[in-house]
Image 1 (cartoon, rainbow, N blue to C red):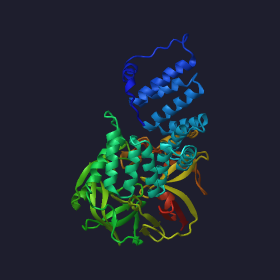
Image 2: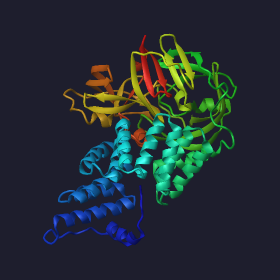
Image 3: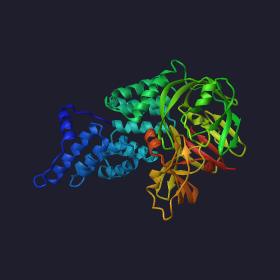
Image 4: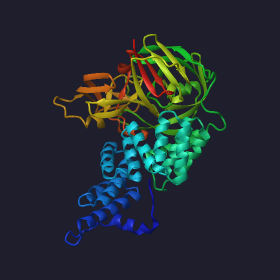
Length: 501
């Protein structure tokens, strides 16, 4: 959150241009801490987050207990703004120990846990906050975010609107309101909320998240009065045959009634995806530019957003759906960019039966038995909880378009140093080649009772996609993780089911 105090405008200018000199002989330790704390607050209020971080760190030595709470709170807010999620997690744990019953501090603790992908722990903290102070805007907002990841959109809407009753001028709350409306396919109201979010930001704000929101307003407005994401046969469960090529699940689909093309079933995509040549062949026109982030050296990638009149795959058909056109296309890849289809991006549950080669899609799927059942959260992408080397819980993206099991570089940095030579490998993703990718042997992974001992994982740079999503991606599980099972991503029950073939 960013608050500008007009009485301190002159102070901001002075602090920004002149060094602060503190006489160690005339100032107590707490006075020095207070000066550095105020400098950190001023820099943060001026959106100079990177500069505020060392100011807050320097304020800690000699600070009183009350000052430490303020220092830690300000530092945590700055770390979240610059997507330093690993440090934010550490600071959240410190703040919790400093102020275990302070609802304002605890709401920030929840935000720090959320940014680490620890959604269960964050939700528990938000509920603790509301038990202490039912009027906490931060607690209400956090709970709304958490409920939305479990598809409880009506409840999430109630909580975010309740948060806005307390703090109507908090930009982030309007962004979350837009997100909830968008997931409910109420695009007009989502655009209104994103527009309010952008309008409440300081005029100097120039962040990736703000750029994305501005583009999203334009795109959502392009739907006009059309009802977005309409199933032609609501309530029906569709069974569609697929084939597997190069560890990809592939189905045939028709866009706008035109000739059928191959689609990769890609739960690691936020929208239906078309390559630039196929979009041109099918006459699909872009309506806005947007931002995406994925594996690869480009990191953040500009793409085009489009609206499809219809998409038909087997007996399944949906109209007025969002899509992404991969334009401009990437060059230098070993294979051309492909089309992608994600049922969960449309809010639908899906079963991928690798044994029968069948894709089963529906708003609700039968509650079938499974050998392994993992809690599932869906925040733009579907994630499950994994534990790395027995002590580092992380959220892993379930990506049917991916091939290997990987961990992020941020996760790898928490582990014991390698005792063998790092083995570089060639890896590319939606944002090009990841030149720094490497193979890390001897890693232990646990997904509930599903264990991978002494396993070699690929280490990827996932900082940019994590920053755009708003939480740290711990890793990715793809074809090698899923292909031995009948896999169900059940959004209604918020579970991932694996039944051994």
